[in-house]
Image 1 (cartoon, rainbow over the protein chains, first blue to last red):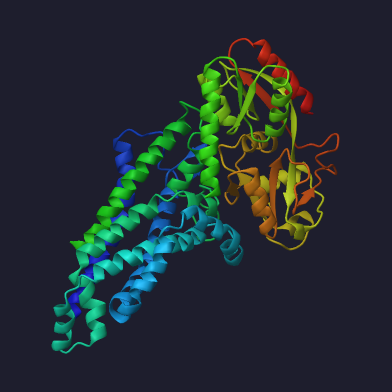
Image 2: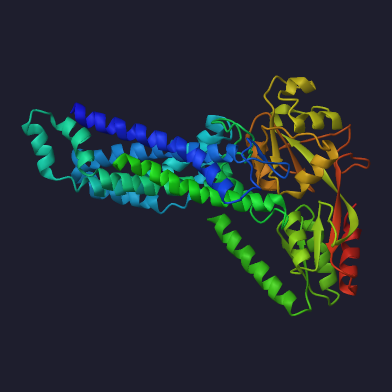
Length: 264
Length: 240
């Protein structure tokens, strides 16, 4: 069991390290591609300041926060449905299916009307909570389908060597289907990092550094959504928006690679 | 869902308007959402005299882009157009300062507004009001009213790093209505509901001499056609 724990710890550390390298890589790749309208400065307050750092960190914070909260709770729910209450699964997954079809803009309005008065304002926290909710339904269905593929022999074998059933389900089952889980998480991260509608409604759209949980902030997707098409043609601002779009695509790709390192 | 349907409808409207414009008879006007009521009323008046006019909203900066590309005939803008576009000032639009009902009437000056926009004031107690955190609702950087207000109030100074930048006038009103201690700017709306309209230098938006007025420009390319001239005259009559 210690070996299994060590493997997960090493994978997680590798993924966290890769995430940090991702931040530097986005700035480096933009520089190499000559996308010099956007700067490595901290603030995005156009047209005077076109720094990438605040929206970049905002995107990473939103994606990681929603991934941990939404993905984490979805995994726990999937474990419950797959191993603890398999009989309740058809009913509950049917209910979750209704949540899967909920347009994110409706969840965003829910956040504006109900959530913001409770948490006291605009910022990354409101976005993380609502995006977690948006991610929870499809991720639960996805994780449940993956955990169903755990061979029965793995769980029986764990009990046979003296571990209790819970240990087998908690540590050995995810290891048996790790590749599928990691791919699901990578897909979820790509979707979360590019989500713009909910973010623009809840984050406050202020690209000043540093982004904060409970202060108006911005992500690259929210900047593109709120400013795309509005910048004067041919201006550095318009060029910077194109660069920001490129940076978002690079971030999504690198984030996928970073999380994929978990499966190494 | 409502937004998506509205977006699809707006895109269809713009596409049909541009298609009609390409036939050369319709005058298509785009630009400032703050000037939209005047723009639409003028369009109805001119259309009733036999010259079809179609108005599509989209904001000042988008309007200027469309007129520069030749996609529309006139753009109404709070931002001063740059050459090669020609521009005339049609009038001025009041910008109301709206606040959450809990704040009550606090006498504000232009200097107070400068302090709010720059971030120097973060509590209503600094302005003689209650001890309540001030949340400032502004507009996103592509908003014409934001650009015009920054020029009017701050010149080249920096705007606060803590403003909530709303997507539209409606978003500002919604946010101010729901957030205790909130204050924001709403253009062209004289009696918004559910919020406190604040006096600036002792004057309200409908009163003569109100200091928070922003100019509305009309931008066009080349020489004005008779249809364009008639439409601009109609808008000018509706603005102050």
